[in-house]
Image 1: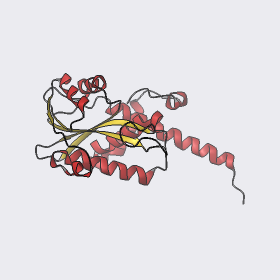
Image 2: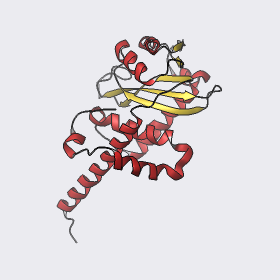
Image 3: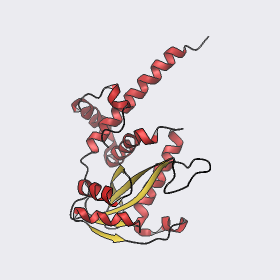
Image 4: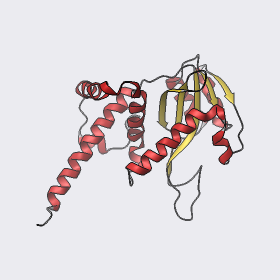
Length: 214
């Protein structure tokens, strides 16, 4: 029995469109998410270095995003915000104004651009870690480091590859949407279906274009 490649192609395209439509719904529902109280932030990256290229910050094959986790006073994770952006003071200031309440207290490592979170009125606690494996074990960053470790494991186990540069905002929104509703898993599907009904139509040309929102 032969394999009809045409049918496989249609099925793949249909599955791709459905997934991206749902992820776009998640992105739009999470677009207004705001964090308050104690918030841990860190710079993070999707992708890996190219052979012979840079590793870590500045790698040509990595897409940068900020991970922010609102915690309890004792450091337990509550909600998360993920945003694809460049690590400049201007980008961090714009992100902070949209994402952080003025009463937030932000905890970060020593990355210089994180000082711009005060543009939102938030207070900032900066710890110069020096980098290396030891810095991920610091208690003040336990929530964000645990979250990023779980995210990396989930992506490596689920996806062989996807277009980080083009679709990262949607894949990050999916993770954010699921994480922020994890306390009521019995209603998450129903809420997503309701959100899908009220979200404006997003045709294929929109979904395949460069980032619209995220």
